[in-house]
Image (cartoon, rainbow, N blue to C red; front, side, top):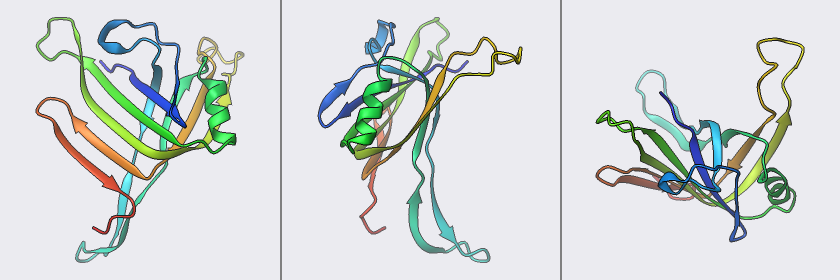
Length: 163
């Protein structure tokens, strides 16, 4: 079973707190993300698979419930605030004891909020009538790192590094 990704967000060095009430594992006041997507790709020559260009990052995308962080995310967007963020991934502990563990972290530095889109589901359609109002937020960034917590396996990339 999937757990939500928890976002710890700073705009120009100031915390933007979310509405998470989960006390365990430091999740209180984090921003609960119900969807997370991050992608990087390189242009490849079809025959040989050789790289023909630099890697390109797509904007990091999250979906979240509209909460107390929403106006501050809008402010960070319109004021072009510098964003630093940690996305902490949680899962049921694989040992089966019923606990939850934090197992993965993605961190972005020197980022910006690229977009914010809010919506309320169609209340006439029975399949969506009980869904909460949501928003989609995208981030662009200068530096990204990925860390698998168990063993500290990590990699960091900065878009202006030649690779």
